[in-house]
Image (cartoon, rainbow, N blue to C red):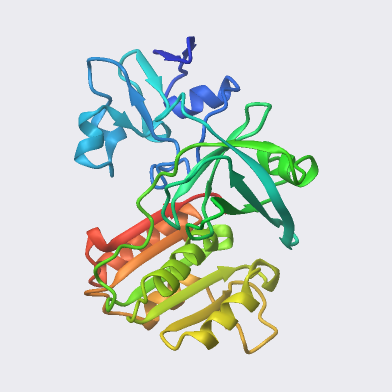
Length: 321
């Protein structure tokens, strides 16, 4: 067993237990997503002189590694650690200005910041309610003069934060949020580059923002292909908006995919990642965005690389959609 110090509290790990699991087991509210080292939502920093285990820094940039950042979800501590959250003491304040239902289990909330915001469509923030419950959610809209953030939140049966959103959160209520984080966003300078975006469930949220940013703010001229997957049609909650976008932009193509029963020809049968990667076998020169369930993201990331996409051109955001 080793000791983990966080927020002036000390916790002891159990056998073969990660730092994240130790904190969650002790009811410590910290942001997390995939628990597999992919989404980086749980990113932390070690304050110790000894660097964190090498394996816990997998996928992080060199600049982050040098500053002792690590992923607690895959960190098996070798020694006692003192850890903090990035921007731990920096919380911004917002007010809920809209809340609506997108599907049977997905809700949209819009948050208006009390001060100007700097973010890229597709990045994520940590949301915190007055009870101190923290969860990470991707930004589904583009920067705007009103300083508003839009989120698509899947309502989970036992989700502390999502159940709060569904049953307690009301328009006009305050909600705290962190500065935007993550590298899953549109990049300027390659407007002719073809883009492949694959998402499952609410993994659509960051992809929707990225597509709007590319088309509306940067006049992206390259082909943009979005494959959105769900088990049933109710999970394709933005179908009308995406079909309208397809009509208005000749270079945008939308393929809704169903892994369950298909009752209409407007849907493609199968998993979104498999359909997309079977259609586009050679991805050399493409930019690829993958958002949604961790297993899908990991598998698609590997296949996209094997099919020619540069590892530097693959942007992944894995979470429990």
